[in-house]
Length: 178
Length: 201
Ligand code: HEM
Ligand code: HEM
Image (cartoon, rainbow over all chains, first blue to last red):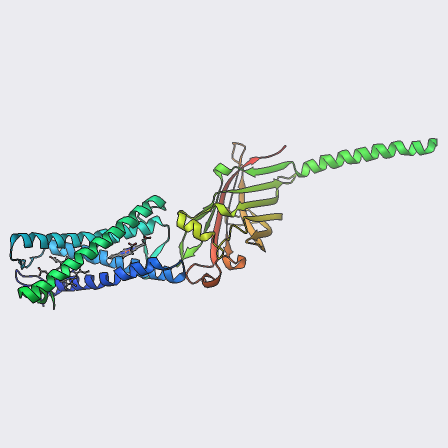
């Protein structure tokens, strides 16, 4: 079980990063909408603690993943054309960017709202900004825009994965699976 | 006739003297009044979530303290505008005025009055005195103790500071689903840093 990628294959570590993050994000999106829809109540606070905890976990995972990626070999893209290759890496780049921007904008929103956070009810999340109404609504807006861009890109991303696997027959999905 | 007049004069004089004495002594009681300067005085409060403080402050309040002829604090009165509670954001400030919390539209003011102030031996520099009295908050009256310090720097003003803890359930603040206190703690820290000016005459 090598942790290192080759030019042909993703290592189990890269796969773990990919699918763990994917799982967390698939939980995060409905959880975020659910949290926001609740009226102010103890339940809302609890749901938000989960949302913020899992979101910061994504943040941490992505930072480690990117640091690891810088030093890694990346499997050669399964693209048929230069354009496809550019589009794929642009989409992946945006996905990485969103996985940073979402937690960051969420963190700013949370800090500016002046409500303290203990991740998983254990680790106090420091405030990165003070209480600030204007900043809070801007950050919440950024968070929301990121959510919609994320959903759009994910549809393309998943569509592309399925297309590669089922129509182009290059086993792209299998390459990312364990 | 003459004898009654003879008695009348000293009675009048005595009465006048008595009145003068009363006036002087009453002036003595109220001679040393101090009033908080709103711009330089702060009254903070902090409930908590999971033990982490959520800081807030009342922006409008007034504190009056009077001292006796030996310069000992004698009475203390505090009034607080509940609608001035500020927890940093509009969402928060709206939430805390709801009926479950402060219900500020019905209970606009909190009042504390004490005529029993004792000086105490304490290691805490913020507890030179303890004012015992009644806090009226959200329509509930409770006996509480307010420890405080008093000092007079050379500028002629006085500094008063102190800290205490109140149980929010005692005043029905945070009712219903919030009353448990497992999320938003029951103990609320209250502390103040005041600058008072002499308010005599
Ligand atoms: C929240 C969900 C997801 C995110 C954020 C995400 C993100 C990414 C990123 C950033 C990469 C590029 C990896 C790199 O070059 O370092 C990648 C690759 C990949 N993803 Fe996802 N992904 C998600 C969900 C999915 C799903 C649901 C599928 C499959 C249906 C999938 C299939 C793939 C495949 C096959 C690759 C490998 C492409 C290759 O081998 O060149 N992803 N994903
Ligand atoms: C992978 C990361 C994350 C995803 C996918 C995500 C997704 C979402 C979604 C879908 C919503 C509801 C729609 C909206 O108003 O934006 C939301 C709201 C929210 N999220 Fe996140 N989130 C993430 C991370 C975080 C983090 C780390 C925090 C805080 C530390 C956070 C704090 C918030 C807050 C405070 C809201 C409510 C915004 C408002 O008041 O309008 N999120 N999130």
